[in-house]
Length: 396
Image (cartoon, rainbow, N blue to C red):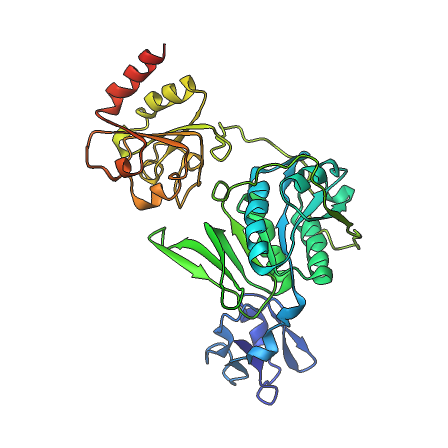
């Protein structure tokens, strides 16, 4: 779909410029001009917007908006690094990217941005990357959406990857859409599953919809690259292969005045306690059965005793008992620890989808028919406020 100006009906009154909610209209002489900011909201076609009917909403032929798909190949993974350390989700995506690349007969590649972080290239090879595209510049030392978007988009235009994957982290969720807009393609956010359609090799991107009550599979048939952000903890890393090597492509990095519109002045660490669920080996989670915000003190005692972190179900977060950063599930964080202890969690499907890949699951619940017991390796029927102190006493 597209918005078209009917020049013969435009009277040059300029009223539309102030009415456009996107600021996408300007004047060229006596004619209105539709700029790239237009998101086709369709408001300009309403009579109250333009009484002369100078704007029309039209269907655009697929040939006008599509691309030559045959020119695109390879699976790219954005290798997110912070302070010279690769994020786990990037290594997980290399593992998943390898499976996708094998299905369509191409290479899995990593694109790495930063300043003097070439030491990470070897690690990317050892976790499965066949090719590493590397961009190094002072402007890339700290994440900046303007500099990172330009570098990655320039590489996408030149090398034409078929698939580009980002981790659904704070950075990936910001960067992915920026690159997608520049590349004039779509992006599916927060994917929990990726597959290749055996009939035409399209990427099938599955994500929760309607608050996690439905799983939607999305395809991008006419544009390239196919782009997704993927939740941390969903995919599995490949086993590291020491001394594995691959190809390296150094990207040319240059910025003109105006390319970088913002400056990172200072990075301030959050004052509140931050929980890293994706990296935790042990998670002790509380659900509605905890009863109150104060009830989480019991859960935290067990987590501290086991050297783990505290998780929570959505019900507890919605009730204001604990911060959203602790939420496990489809609408929170997907986790895969060695040990997951569910305390007072009934086991709604949205929660199970976010933790059922844990190595060992222990469930504590007063109801012996709670759904959580169906995925648990060990189940304890009882009041968590009595069971947890007993476990701590047994641990010594």
